[in-house]
Image (cartoon, rainbow, N blue to C red; front, side, top):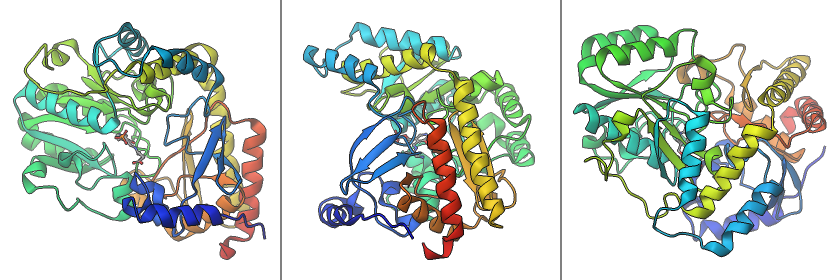
Length: 433
Ligand code: KE4
């Protein structure tokens, strides 16, 4: 049975663990939820990453979304290299910030004004503060399994690392920070209607991952987002689409582009920076006008809009807009997940799959989940064995049953076929991993 050597990664992990909590700078990377240790990556190019043991890994995480063009796209590298001698950060406005704002507005028309920050967490935290400042209300609504970064008010039944680690909230988050955060199951229409009937006039904002990628891959029921949009409009609550993951990923215009829904605010991250640290929030001009210094709602950031990250983001978005077809990407992603499902079925293993654009999910369950609660009933034990087996086949999947996966424009049809062949082998030897 094929087993790769990860010895040097293990040694580095042991050393890192003495210096960095859990040996990583973000929890999900530690591979704790798949009962093994992480790989230390030395370099990444296109659809591949090479670890410190010299193993070439076919990457279906893409830095958790940003690497949609593939790693180190030559034209992005060239653009960043050209920008470097001009300075890394000015702490002052530059024309590049106008250029990326115009691009965002063109690709996500609901965003009439936009503010750049340095992470998705910052974007979501600021958008919620803005919604509270604009409406004068304090209640916010989120959905179990959805993850919007680690701001105190959002660490209640979050998805992503939180769900995987089974932490319902988090120590260190004061009760006062979460007492106004209401939580509902995703796709719970009755619950949504009841909440708005009872407390609609108190709600500042609803924040939602319009397609959930932090509790596996969960699609909204037909009409669910439209109902949510209507309930928000009728009650005066703001609708915030957290498209940090789905933005420029499920389609060039995100979920709102697919669905034709205009949220009041949108948060972005990941792809917008092309791998460099950029987050953004934006939307209705009358709402955004409340943000300092044009309005009283405070938000700031030393490195927001720095020329290097913005150059990387601009080139990424320009290439996405003009050189690549999301139709082709969606076709390749569908071929991947349906190939995995066919392979699992051949081996008598229950698997359900779904995808949109370059984002996908597979779950060891007879049916697709409509909520985090349903996703939680899947066979996580099978997932762990499958993950470890695929790792030894050189296939790098998200190390959690509660994450989505990503295909880039650098993945080829051959890569997809090799992945399916690897899955066939692993399913035939599952008990050995
Ligand atoms: P960051 O602060 O990690 O840039 O973004 C937070 C965030 C906000 N909204 C959504 C929908 C997100 O998916 C994220 C971050 N996603 C996780 C993975 N699912 C990042 C990976 C990690 O935590 O290391």
